[in-house]
Length: 92
Image (cartoon, rainbow, N blue to C red; front, side, top):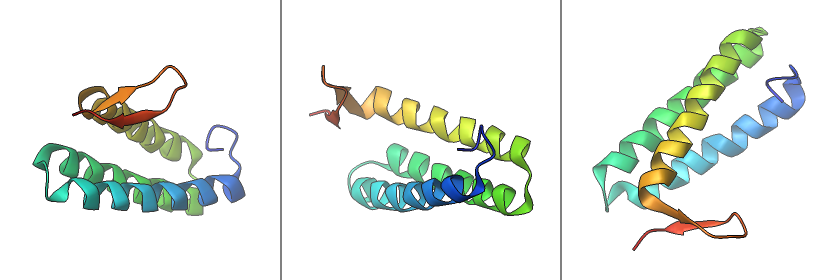
């Protein structure tokens, strides 16, 4: 939605991500500091995306969205395992 400058969908998706990162942060808080910090940082990037969307600064929103995608990949690469169907679970 950010790539196509679709404010309605991008705003909706950002709200979903905001909640998802808050939930992720809460999940990891008592377990490990590293993924907790990554979730906090990603949540802040979502806030920056939301601000950029509201201001119509789509290039800025795209930059922040790319940072969020990197944060997801970083955490999933270390703490999650992927199944053949594309779903993930926390590594044991």
